[in-house]
Image: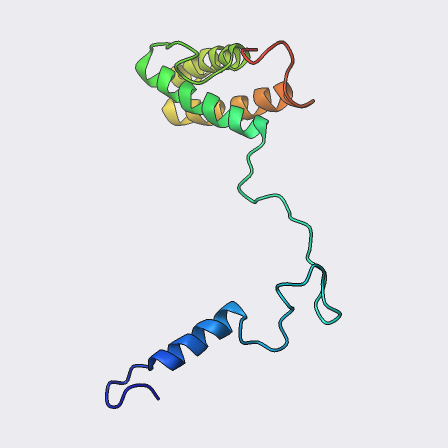
Length: 139
């Protein structure tokens, strides 16, 4: 096996191993030049949605929760466009932060952060329940 005394595979063994890994050397593998499946090969499954696909409501909840924490911690609102928010998302943020301030005062920051997460998810789910809101991209 391989070069004498080295314990490493030789170039031929490496090429054969690579060919087997890529399917080039497998006699049972379907012909890659054919236009359809071979009788022994199953038809390819349709592509599925990526597991990392994020819905508009999830994206909204994530960005609103992030900026709500920032606003709560700094006590300063920024420009909604610089935050990457639409006007509608900014309205959600303002409502969430107002509620979080009251909870923070009474129950502490951890409770306020939990409220931010819950309210952001609920408000964004409602906003995007029928798809993308109408009224232009800024809405």
